[in-house]
Each structure stands twice: as C-alpha cells, then as structure tokens.
Length: 115
Length: 117
Image (tube, rainbow over all chains, first blue to last red; front, side):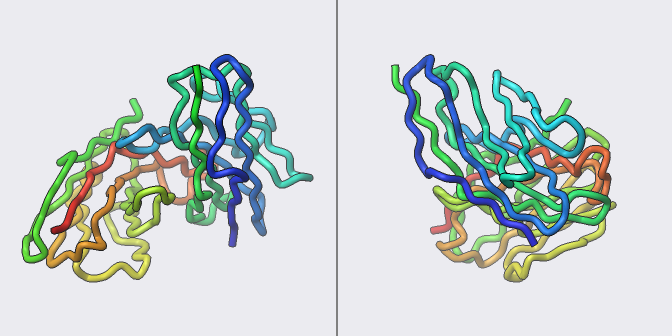
C-alpha cells in the first residue's frame, strides 16, 4: 500500500520567486512518483515522473523534482514563477516494478502567483 | 503525441436519463482508465481496462457501466444517476498495466463535466 501527503493545500508566491511544492510518500516497495498539473476546468497534464535512475528529474515548463529516498520526498520546484503556473498540482505514487500499481494521488496544492 | 480526447466536454442530465461518455486515444496504449473527480479533490479511480478487458472495478455502483469496444475507445454508460454523481469524469490511458520501463505512466484527457439534476 502507498500514500501521498502534500504539505500545504495552498501556496502563494510572487511572480519571479521560487516555487516549492512539497510531497512526501510512503510505499512498501520502490515507488514510481509523478507530478501532474491541473488548470481550471481541465484534465491532468503530466509534469514529470521518477521511475528509476537519476534522482533529479526535469519536466515541462521549467519544473523539476528530486527523489530523496532517505526523506521519502519528491518535492517540486521551479526557480522563477510565472503567472501561467497558477494551477492545482497533484503528486502521485504507484508501486514500481512489473506488478500493477494503483496510482495514488495526494490531496493537491493550489498554487497562486501574484504579480 | 500524448493526446486523450473526451466527449462531450459538458453534460447535463436528469436522474432518469441514459447518457454515455466517450474517450479515445491513438497512442497504441492497451490500458485505459476512468476516474471521477469531485471539486477540490484528487481523482478517484473507478475502472481499469487492460487489453479491452475489465481488470479493476473499484466497487462502483451499477448505474455506471463501462465498455471498451476496441483498443482505442472507452465508453462510460450512465443510467439513473444521482445528483451526488455530478463531477468531472476523467479518462486516462497508459502503455500497459505492468510495463516497468515506462512506469505505467498515465496520460489524462480533458474530462467531461457532468451535472445531474
């Protein structure tokens, strides 16, 4: 079984500031980790994913995340926020390997970007 | 191309109506999923199809009936819904359920926003 905790249901930053969205997971097997973004009234768009290999993964729109096994974390960052980044962000985990793993989502973090 | 399409975008139906949601992908994916998302909540898994066969039903009420006519198409038939079924219904697809190399990454469609009156 696995679970995801996203710290902070709302995060507010100024345009140009660092974006940090926190995600901690628990998993009994090596996890696969994902960040999705959802703009208002739209579906989920994959930002980035970690499966195996390099622990720092880069995604679309300048976002990146680092898998830290010792901290069971997969925080999402972007050096400089843009107004277009305002959206809801979901961290998700599934069991790694070849067995089917249900995708478990965190509760989401709404990012607001101020001019 | 990682596009999953869903129709219609919006749907309003009465509790006695029968309607269907449609999802299509042309990425050669063999696993397809239906999720339900209530406002300000994460998506909740409803059904999983693998190679056109129903693999997982997350104890969804029978008023929701999924169908996978072929590898590209997934339908969700709706009958006698309740107002609490109003939500965004998301379809997703992935290469397969168990393909470790690609992590079973799921790609989502834009959703159908359903309102039950």
